[in-house]
Image 1 (cartoon, one colour):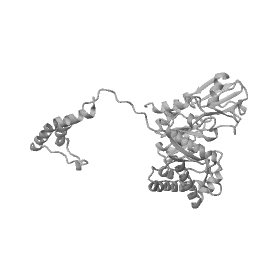
Image 2 (cartoon, rainbow, N blue to C red; image 1 turned 120 degrees about the vertical axis):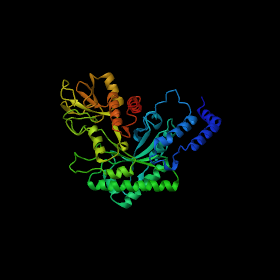
Image 3 (spheres, rainbow, N blue to C red; image 1 turned 180 degrees about the vertical axis):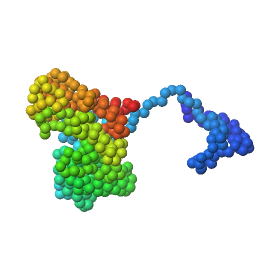
Image 4 (tube, rainbow, N blue to C red; image 1 turned 90 degrees about the vertical axis):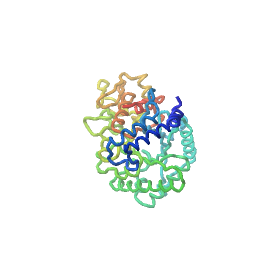
Length: 422
């Protein structure tokens, strides 16, 4: 049935009847409530009869067909390592599983604090945004500034002075507009002192003001502003206690992305460890603790986008017979310095693994063969983690890094889990 035409028909065919009834109500001294006074506590006895008549005459018939379920809205993010463009170009990204994609990375000049854009990056960024915006569904494109190999001293120096902050901010907004990005992302690993955190607060404030000002002048939608951050709201493991400026983040940043991985790795080869476990009864080094610390600090859950790894960390077991989490180890295992992409973990599991285990207590997976041991996230743990993120009311999740997956297996698992109604 054409619902719109049906409603018009009711109005045209029964308008006279409705008008007559309303006149009858008026003459009977039944009172209609003043629509301008809709907040007043009117007695239902005064208004029920009149509005029942009006609603009955005008309302369309109730549909007998089930309404389609609408997937929960949120961020399904992924960082794209630009240095792997030849092996995994932007055209290879499936936006069916991602809503937000981050170009990783560009860095500021150590003296001018303006973003350095090489000829190669110029071509890649143009391709990145154009490709993502042309895909169906269309994905939002962010340019991420910094990264794990960027100099934290350069970012610290930049944030310490109003003039250098302005140079950095103006350059970032200009670059974002020039290449058609939808947003800006800061990946500062990591602010090292309480003063850095104080300066970060100023940076976020001035960045937001610049974004709003540029939008009012250009007439374009405001750029989004996000930041990749430590897994917890404060550096409780550090010798220099410091915490993120949660008030400034809540006020000026659209969302922050706690990097919930790398809890264990090549810096500690004495025992095996799950580097992205959701729970750890023995310590606070876990995703569950990290996310709860952000919420307790005052960040609205919807502004938190939880990090998930598309890689594992490996160890060399001391003895093949002791192969669980926390087993004695003597060094890093297979992969690049103890790091193995998920696509390679799948190959390991199919060709070598003697055991593939999902650990329910930590919500993590590990595989082993001989003395080789790998801790990682697989389909079972990814699904549980995304369910955790939804239960906490988070704004979404992100992966490091797009291109490390095996045929988008984990990307699809996460996307499906996010879309499934609770």
